[in-house]
Amino acid sequence: MLLRGRKARDARSAATAIDRALADGSGLAKFRELVAAQGGDVRMVDDPSRLPRAPRVETLLARRSGYVADIAADHIGIASVRLGAGREKKGDPIDHRTGIVLHAKVGDRVERGQPYAEVHVAGKPDDHDAIAMIERAFRWSARRVAPRRLLLGRIAS
Image (cartoon, rainbow, N blue to C red):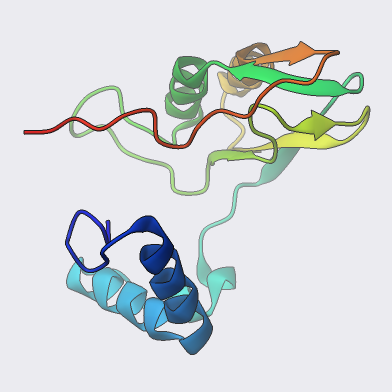
């Protein structure tokens, strides 16, 4: 965003600016401004315990040691919607207690029994299916897998 907004001349200076904003607190201050501008409760920025919490968190553990070879993003997105964390259509409610936290990405080595995802569930009938979909989204390999590039390409206007 810093590069796109011409606030930095290259990736290195952008990374330096981001590190500085995190260290000196200006990044957090800007985040508070954004939350306030959207009508949010800025108290939650400083006290995350005020955020709504799912009644249950399911931790997905690796069944064997290996590398994350692929994660089907579409499966993760559909599972999020089924949990209530996303919408199928405009106007659908969002359950802010629900969601998915991924602890592993493509290329990561994961040991047997290590958590690779957390699923925050509200206790709906679809929760089990959503969890199964998240499990199926991960493809594993016994061999080392190259991590994916963060930026695949640039689309110019």
